Structures are given as C-alpha cells and as structure tokens.
Length: 135
Image (cartoon, rainbow, N blue to C red; front, side):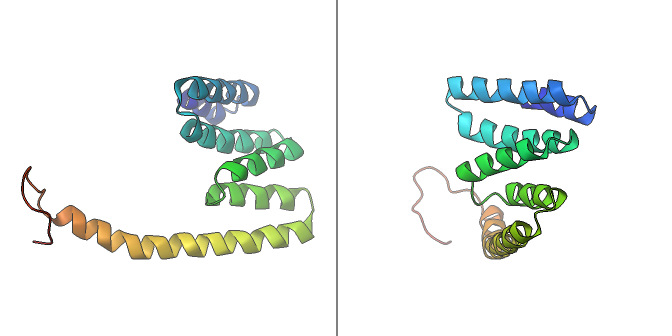
C-alpha cells in the first residue's frame, strides 16, 4: 500500500495518497509489521498534508511519527518546515536545534559504523563449523 500511496503522491493526488497510506498502516498492523510501515506512511502523510496546505494536520502527523521514531531525522525536518510555514519562529528555532543535534549524531554514527561495515563486508564469509575469529 505504501507504493500505491507514493504513486498518488507523485501524481499530486493528495486525498487518494492519504487514504492509501492509512490503509497501509491498517494492513501493517494486522500483519505485525506495523512499525516499519507506519513510520514510512506517517512520513509520507505529513508530506502530502503539507502539499495540500493542511499544515496543522501535517504537524500533528510529524509529531506522531516522532513519538514512534525520535531518531528519525526526516520527521524533524518535516516539523521544522511546517513550523516555519506556520510562522511559529520560536518553536522553529528550538526544533531546528534538535534537528541539527540529531543530524550530527546520525553523521557521527555513519562515520563510525561505515568503515566497520565495509571491512566486515570485505572479509570472506565464515564457513559452517569454522571457529569465530578475526582471520
């Protein structure tokens, strides 16, 4: 359902996109995969609501997404954009500082983890029964 919603979003069919994202969340909940689907759907819903000019609803959607995934920089970016569009400068400044902090943490994580992942990927796969080790 998320790809269907994305297609509607790309075609600027806002209401159909919102309905498709809501269905994706419902289906995800029934199948036990709700967190991943819900996170993506909430982000897309916020974007569509922004495009439709429904800024208060978009803000509420981004805040709902942040309750589930506080680390997700995209929700912070969306919230900053909506607050700015609403002219709520004081709140925008506070949220923007938090966004910068989250972006720095994400960059540091990437800087630390990426070389490790590359090095690990370059090692030959361990065969079944081989002892674990660095060689």
